[in-house]
Structures are given as C-alpha cells and as structure tokens.
Length: 154
Image (cartoon, rainbow, N blue to C red; front, side, top):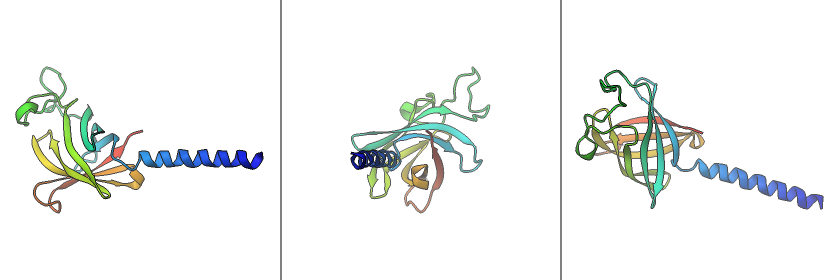
C-alpha cells in the first residue's frame, strides 16, 4: 500500500507542477508595464483571451506625471487618441487587441500607446520562464520599433 500512496503523491506533484508551468506559457494574466526609458512601472495591464485572440486592458496607472492627471483630479485620459478612445479614461481602456499565437510568439494584433495616441503592430514573446513579457511595438517591419519588458504579477 505504501508504494501506491507514494505513486499517488508523486503524480499529484507532477500534475501541480505542470499546471503551474501551463499558467506561465501564455501571456494571459496580469502584468506590470515598465517604461523602457525610465525603468519605472507605468501601469498594470490585464491580458485575456477571447476566441483565440489576446487583448489587454489597463487596470491601473502608476507614476502618472502632473500633466497626465486632469486639472479636476480625475484619472489620466487619452487626450492624444483618435476615434472612440479620444479623451476617454486610460484606466479600463483596451490598449491591445487581435493578438494570436504563432509558434512561440504572439502577433498579428495592435497596441495603442495612450501617451501619443498612436497604434502599432505588436509582437509578444515570453521570457524568463514566463515571468517576463517582451512587448514589441512597431510600424512596418518588426526589426524597427520599440520594446518594453513587462513583469508578471502574482
């Protein structure tokens, strides 16, 4: 009976480890966006999946400058955005959409930079065992553009 008990414990540990690994093999989750120029956290982004496509929504804005905050003390708005996002609060805004898995990267979607209102193509790559996410925004070719490293939040 003892060998069967040990086998059951080993199997449950393996299943638990594989579930933990599976949770880190996708960008789905909550991420701290870190500014590539200053190294300071700027926001908390939640990435979700819907019908095989990823989208990202701003949950929190951090380290906002006085210029980012409206004179009435309200949270920052996307003053540089066009269309439906024009002058809308950044908190709650979907800033990434249409991203799908392609081998070991996710791409094919778009990402909005609320600071300048511009929309870029985006490519996501998990690093550091799924604890970091390289977010590469670009126009035209992926070789040109800018990357940020986001940190997974537990």
